[in-house]
Image 1 (cartoon, rainbow, N blue to C red):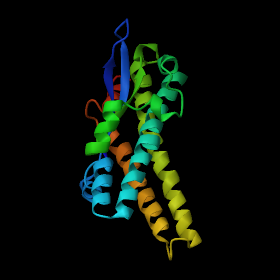
Image 2: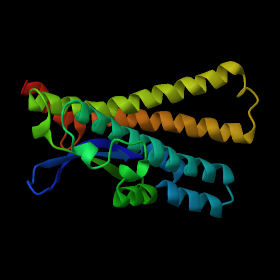
Image 3: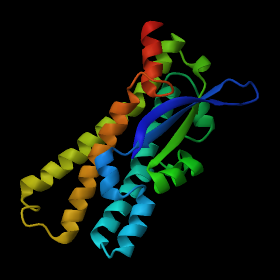
Image 4: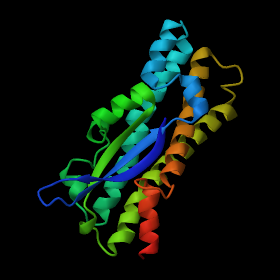
Amino acid sequence: MRLTKSHDLPWRDWRNRKIGHSGIIVMPPAIIRRLMGGPLIGFIQALGAGNWDLATINLGVAVVVLLICFPLHELAHAVTADRLGDDTPRMMGRLTLNPAAHLSLIGSVLFLLVGFGWATTPINPSRLRGNQHVSHAVVAVAGPIANLLIAVVIGLGVRGLVATGLVSTPTPAMQIFVQTAILAVLINLQLCLLNLLPIPPLDGWTILKGWFRH
Protein backbone atom coordinates (compact mmCIF):
# COMPACT_ATOMS: atom_id res chain seq x y z
CA MET A 1 0.00 0.00 0.00
CA ARG A 2 1.56 3.49 -0.01
CA LEU A 3 5.36 4.44 -0.89
CA THR A 4 4.69 5.45 2.60
CA LYS A 5 5.39 8.92 2.93
CA SER A 6 4.50 11.81 5.04
CA HIS A 7 5.45 15.05 3.48
CA ASP A 8 5.11 18.79 3.45
CA LEU A 9 2.75 20.35 0.94
CA PRO A 10 1.79 24.02 0.73
CA TRP A 11 -1.47 24.93 2.41
CA ARG A 12 -2.61 28.45 1.56
CA ASP A 13 -4.28 30.51 4.23
CA TRP A 14 -4.73 34.26 4.11
CA ARG A 15 -1.07 34.64 5.07
CA ASN A 16 -0.02 31.86 2.68
CA ARG A 17 2.18 30.32 5.35
CA LYS A 18 0.60 26.99 6.22
CA ILE A 19 2.37 23.72 5.60
CA GLY A 20 0.59 20.38 5.46
CA HIS A 21 2.02 17.02 6.44
CA SER A 22 0.70 14.29 4.20
CA GLY A 23 1.15 10.53 4.26
CA ILE A 24 1.49 8.23 1.26
CA ILE A 25 1.75 4.47 1.18
CA VAL A 26 2.64 2.17 -1.72
CA MET A 27 2.26 -1.59 -1.45
CA PRO A 28 5.41 -3.72 -1.75
CA PRO A 29 5.33 -5.78 -4.98
CA ALA A 30 4.56 -9.06 -3.18
CA ILE A 31 1.55 -7.58 -1.42
CA ILE A 32 0.37 -5.90 -4.64
CA ARG A 33 0.42 -9.27 -6.38
CA ARG A 34 -1.42 -10.83 -3.44
CA LEU A 35 -4.09 -8.15 -3.31
CA MET A 36 -4.25 -7.62 -7.09
CA GLY A 37 -3.87 -3.82 -6.94
CA GLY A 38 -5.83 -1.45 -4.74
CA PRO A 39 -8.02 -3.06 -2.06
CA LEU A 40 -11.29 -2.14 -3.79
CA ILE A 41 -10.18 -3.59 -7.12
CA GLY A 42 -8.83 -6.66 -5.34
CA PHE A 43 -12.11 -7.02 -3.45
CA ILE A 44 -14.18 -6.90 -6.65
CA GLN A 45 -11.88 -9.29 -8.50
CA ALA A 46 -11.83 -11.74 -5.60
CA LEU A 47 -15.64 -11.70 -5.42
CA GLY A 48 -15.81 -12.32 -9.15
CA ALA A 49 -13.53 -15.33 -8.75
CA GLY A 50 -15.55 -16.60 -5.81
CA ASN A 51 -12.56 -16.20 -3.46
CA TRP A 52 -14.32 -14.95 -0.35
CA ASP A 53 -11.21 -15.26 1.82
CA LEU A 54 -9.15 -12.94 -0.38
CA ALA A 55 -12.11 -10.56 -0.73
CA THR A 56 -12.33 -10.32 3.05
CA ILE A 57 -8.58 -9.73 3.36
CA ASN A 58 -8.79 -6.90 0.81
CA LEU A 59 -11.64 -5.38 2.77
CA GLY A 60 -9.68 -5.74 6.00
CA VAL A 61 -6.64 -4.04 4.48
CA ALA A 62 -8.76 -1.10 3.32
CA VAL A 63 -10.23 -0.72 6.80
CA VAL A 64 -6.83 -0.94 8.50
CA VAL A 65 -5.21 1.65 6.25
CA LEU A 66 -8.07 4.15 6.04
CA LEU A 67 -9.27 3.87 9.63
CA ILE A 68 -6.00 3.20 11.48
CA CYS A 69 -2.74 3.72 9.53
CA PHE A 70 -3.49 7.01 7.81
CA PRO A 71 -5.44 8.70 10.64
CA LEU A 72 -3.04 7.77 13.47
CA HIS A 73 -0.01 8.78 11.39
CA GLU A 74 -1.52 12.21 10.78
CA LEU A 75 -2.89 12.52 14.32
CA ALA A 76 0.66 12.05 15.61
CA HIS A 77 1.80 14.98 13.45
CA ALA A 78 -1.12 17.08 14.68
CA VAL A 79 -0.68 16.35 18.39
CA THR A 80 3.07 16.94 18.26
CA ALA A 81 2.67 20.24 16.42
CA ASP A 82 0.04 21.33 18.94
CA ARG A 83 2.30 20.45 21.89
CA LEU A 84 5.11 22.43 20.29
CA GLY A 85 3.02 25.57 20.02
CA ASP A 86 1.33 25.42 16.61
CA ASP A 87 -2.43 25.48 17.10
CA THR A 88 -3.15 25.14 13.38
CA PRO A 89 -4.14 21.45 13.63
CA ARG A 90 -6.42 22.28 16.59
CA MET A 91 -8.10 25.11 14.69
CA MET A 92 -8.53 22.81 11.68
CA GLY A 93 -10.16 20.12 13.81
CA ARG A 94 -7.33 17.59 13.41
CA LEU A 95 -6.85 16.70 17.09
CA THR A 96 -9.32 13.83 16.83
CA LEU A 97 -9.41 10.09 16.26
CA ASN A 98 -12.13 10.60 13.67
CA PRO A 99 -10.59 9.31 10.40
CA ALA A 100 -12.74 11.69 8.34
CA ALA A 101 -10.82 14.64 9.77
CA HIS A 102 -7.52 13.33 8.39
CA LEU A 103 -8.36 11.56 5.15
CA SER A 104 -8.16 13.13 1.71
CA LEU A 105 -11.03 12.16 -0.59
CA ILE A 106 -8.79 11.94 -3.65
CA GLY A 107 -5.99 10.23 -1.72
CA SER A 108 -8.39 7.67 -0.25
CA VAL A 109 -10.06 6.87 -3.59
CA LEU A 110 -6.67 6.43 -5.29
CA PHE A 111 -5.55 4.14 -2.49
CA LEU A 112 -8.65 1.97 -2.91
CA LEU A 113 -8.19 1.80 -6.68
CA VAL A 114 -4.42 1.56 -7.17
CA GLY A 115 -2.92 1.09 -3.68
CA PHE A 116 -1.42 4.58 -3.58
CA GLY A 117 -2.88 7.42 -1.54
CA TRP A 118 -2.37 10.05 1.11
CA ALA A 119 -3.80 11.90 4.09
CA THR A 120 -2.91 15.37 5.34
CA THR A 121 -2.35 17.48 8.43
CA PRO A 122 -1.88 21.24 8.05
CA ILE A 123 0.75 22.87 10.24
CA ASN A 124 2.48 26.23 10.36
CA PRO A 125 6.19 25.74 11.18
CA SER A 126 6.62 29.45 11.98
CA ARG A 127 4.43 28.95 15.06
CA LEU A 128 6.51 26.11 16.51
CA ARG A 129 8.50 26.89 19.65
CA GLY A 130 12.29 26.75 19.77
CA ASN A 131 14.42 26.19 16.71
CA GLN A 132 11.83 26.10 13.91
CA HIS A 133 13.69 23.52 11.83
CA VAL A 134 14.33 21.20 14.78
CA SER A 135 10.73 21.48 15.99
CA HIS A 136 9.48 20.82 12.47
CA ALA A 137 11.68 17.71 12.35
CA VAL A 138 10.17 16.51 15.64
CA VAL A 139 6.68 16.96 14.17
CA ALA A 140 7.77 15.03 11.06
CA VAL A 141 9.22 12.06 12.95
CA ALA A 142 6.06 11.66 15.04
CA GLY A 143 4.15 10.11 12.13
CA PRO A 144 6.59 7.25 11.42
CA ILE A 145 6.93 6.58 15.16
CA ALA A 146 3.14 6.24 15.41
CA ASN A 147 3.11 3.63 12.64
CA LEU A 148 5.99 1.75 14.28
CA LEU A 149 4.05 1.60 17.54
CA ILE A 150 0.93 0.38 15.72
CA ALA A 151 2.98 -2.39 14.08
CA VAL A 152 4.41 -3.41 17.46
CA VAL A 153 0.98 -3.51 19.13
CA ILE A 154 -0.61 -5.56 16.33
CA GLY A 155 2.43 -7.83 16.16
CA LEU A 156 2.29 -8.49 19.90
CA GLY A 157 -1.41 -9.24 19.54
CA VAL A 158 -0.73 -11.84 16.84
CA ARG A 159 2.07 -13.31 18.93
CA GLY A 160 -0.33 -13.54 21.84
CA LEU A 161 -2.80 -15.46 19.70
CA VAL A 162 -0.07 -17.88 18.67
CA ALA A 163 0.97 -18.33 22.31
CA THR A 164 -2.58 -19.25 23.31
CA GLY A 165 -2.70 -21.96 20.67
CA LEU A 166 -5.76 -20.47 18.98
CA VAL A 167 -4.05 -20.53 15.59
CA SER A 168 -2.65 -24.06 15.84
CA THR A 169 -5.86 -25.41 14.30
CA PRO A 170 -7.33 -22.17 12.96
CA THR A 171 -10.83 -21.72 11.63
CA PRO A 172 -11.18 -19.99 8.24
CA ALA A 173 -12.19 -16.80 10.04
CA MET A 174 -9.12 -16.97 12.26
CA GLN A 175 -6.87 -17.52 9.24
CA ILE A 176 -8.31 -14.43 7.53
CA PHE A 177 -7.92 -12.40 10.72
CA VAL A 178 -4.29 -13.42 11.23
CA GLN A 179 -3.36 -12.81 7.58
CA THR A 180 -4.96 -9.35 7.69
CA ALA A 181 -3.18 -8.58 10.95
CA ILE A 182 0.18 -9.62 9.49
CA LEU A 183 -0.46 -7.41 6.46
CA ALA A 184 -1.31 -4.56 8.85
CA VAL A 185 2.06 -5.01 10.57
CA LEU A 186 3.89 -4.97 7.21
CA ILE A 187 1.98 -1.91 6.04
CA ASN A 188 2.76 0.06 9.18
CA LEU A 189 6.43 -0.93 9.11
CA GLN A 190 6.59 0.15 5.48
CA LEU A 191 4.87 3.42 6.31
CA CYS A 192 7.39 4.03 9.07
CA LEU A 193 10.54 3.13 7.16
CA LEU A 194 9.75 4.72 3.80
CA ASN A 195 8.66 7.95 5.46
CA LEU A 196 12.11 8.17 6.99
CA LEU A 197 13.83 8.25 3.58
CA PRO A 198 15.55 11.66 3.17
CA ILE A 199 13.74 12.41 -0.08
CA PRO A 200 11.39 15.37 -0.48
CA PRO A 201 8.57 15.52 0.30
CA LEU A 202 8.87 12.58 2.74
CA ASP A 203 9.15 13.10 6.49
CA GLY A 204 12.76 12.00 6.34
CA TRP A 205 13.61 15.08 4.30
CA THR A 206 12.17 17.37 6.97
CA ILE A 207 14.04 15.42 9.65
CA LEU A 208 17.30 15.71 7.70
CA LYS A 209 16.86 19.47 7.26
CA GLY A 210 16.23 19.86 10.97
CA TRP A 211 19.37 17.87 11.78
CA PHE A 212 21.67 19.92 9.56
CA ARG A 213 20.15 23.25 10.56
CA HIS A 214 20.34 22.50 14.26
